[in-house]
Length: 158
Image (cartoon, rainbow, N blue to C red):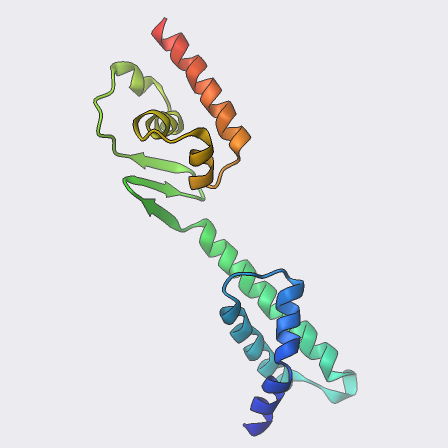
């Protein structure tokens, strides 16, 4: 057991180097732990006849952290973000909206995304920039959607 603890202590910089090279800036402690476990597993699997332990350990740690990143990314794609009275499913972009206003009958002619944008911009009084930042969308995309929404509204109201 002492050998494992000593090995992990001596290779903390290796784990930090992998994290730095992968440009990880969030949840560093979590990925350090993943790296420590991968280092321990590398020690268990290492065969001295096949080469140098340092390179084997580096690659084991690197691929373990990449797998953990991939798994974390997959989970975050399917999480629900709930803020105020708007719920967004990031993977499918479904919007469930509760509005405090009574909207005219033309409001039902709009699709859910257009309704969501209309409520956010005009009832919640968010700017296009604030909306894009809040929902992590491209500013130019939201600007273009707003233009299309206004064109559609002009067509509905004339």
